[in-house]
Image (cartoon, rainbow, N blue to C red; front, side, top):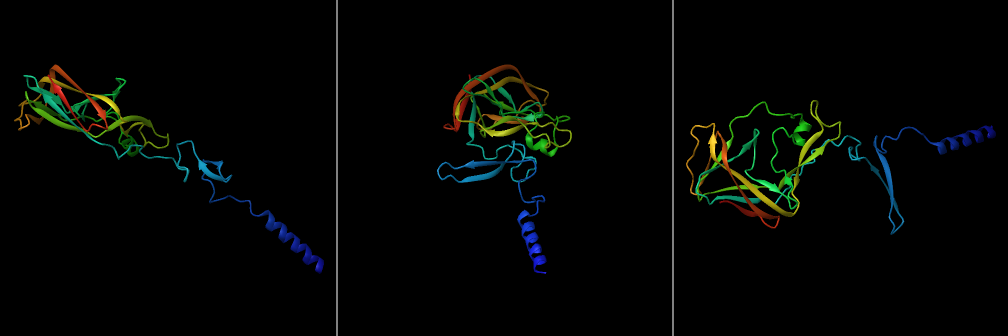
Length: 246
C-alpha cells in the first residue's frame, strides 16, 4: 500500500515538471520574430518583437496606416507682385486639381512636389478605396493681377513624397503606390511663379480688382505670353517671400 502511494507521488511530480506544451496565446504575435538586446552598461538583456516594417510589432497585423504627417509648418506667405505694365493671369487649377500658383526647387535645382495632380492619389485615399482619376472637372479659378497689384497665397511647408503601402492594405482596385504628405526639410529653395497675359474659355474673362490690385474669378484658363518670376527662400528661417513679375 505504501509502495503504491510512493509511485503515484513520483508520477505527479514528473507530470508537474514537464508542464503543458500547448500554444502560447499571449506570446509573440504571429508573423513576428523576437529580438534580444543586451545593455553593455549593466549586462541586462531585453527581448522585444520585431517585424519587417509591414506589420504592427504589437499585434502582428498589417500596418495599414497613412504615413502622411499632419503637424507641418511653419507656413510661408508668398506675395506675387506685378511690376510690369500688362495685366497678368495665373491658374489656380491644373489637371482638375486646385493648386498653388507657385512652384519650388531645392538647392540642387530639383523640383519639389508641392502640387500633385488628381491622378496622383494620396495614401489616405488609397486606404479608403478612393483611387483613380476624376471622371471630369468644372472650370477652375483664375487670378487676375493688375499692373502694380499683388496677390497673396500661402505654402504650408508640405511636400508630397512617393510611398508604397504593404500589399495587403489598399482597398480592392487600388495599387499600393501613393503619395504621403511630408514636412519640407530646412534649406534654400527657389520659389517660382508663372503668369500669362490672356485667358480663354470664359465669359466675362475679368473681375473687379480689390484694393490690393487683384481678384479671382471662376471659369477660364490662363494662357498666352508667359512671364516667369523667381525668388529665394531660406526655409524655415523665412516665413514670407515676395515674387515679382517685371
